[in-house]
Each structure stands twice: as structure tokens, then as C-alpha cells.
Amino acid sequence: MALGLLLVLFMGMSIISILGLALLFLIKGKKGQKAVFYFMAIWGMVIAWMTANSYPTNYIKEQMLSWGFGALAVIALLVQLCGKSEKAFLTAKGLAAASVVLGMAALFVL
Image (tube, rainbow, N blue to C red):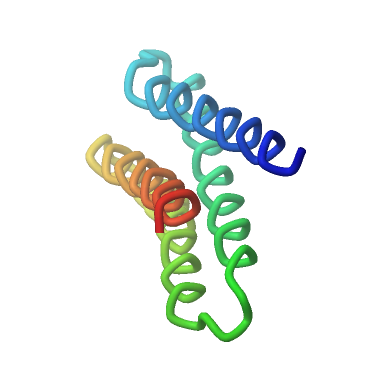
């Protein structure tokens, strides 16, 4: 029963992450890009929280690494809010994507 629920969780999170990453770089409109960007940044923070909480309390190194992946999403938000150029927004999208990909890898592979 529990393994079935974990499979459903894994599949759901994977689908959300893959679709979000694809939309992050394929949507052309500015409003749509920003909406997907904010969702993916928040999604990266949620994944980091889930990953950090999945480790026992004495696995400090792994927890810090997980929080570091979440910090990438926070940095992405700061870059997007402070930077006004298109290059800054592209950098922010890359940081948000890295946060999601690395967080998913840490959650389900490491």
C-alpha cells in the first residue's frame, strides 16, 4: 500500500516537473512565462522542503544540500525581481529549472 502511494507521488511530481520545465522555456507570452516561472520557483522550494524533511535528523549534510537546491529557487526569484533585462529573466529561469531538477534528483535518486 505505502509503496503504491510513493509511486503515485513520484509519478505526479515527475509529470508536474517535466511539464513545468517544458512550459518554462516554450511559452512565448510574457504573462504566461512569468506565471510558469513563479510556479516553478515555488515548486522548487516545495521539493527542497520535502527532500530535507525526508532525511533523518542526523543526516545534516544531505539536508543542507537539499536546502541549497531550494535556495536556488529563492535566488532565481531575486534575480527576476531585481533584474530588468531579458538576460536576467533567462538566468532566473535557468536557476529555477536547476532547483527543480536537482531537487527531484535528490528526492528520488540520492
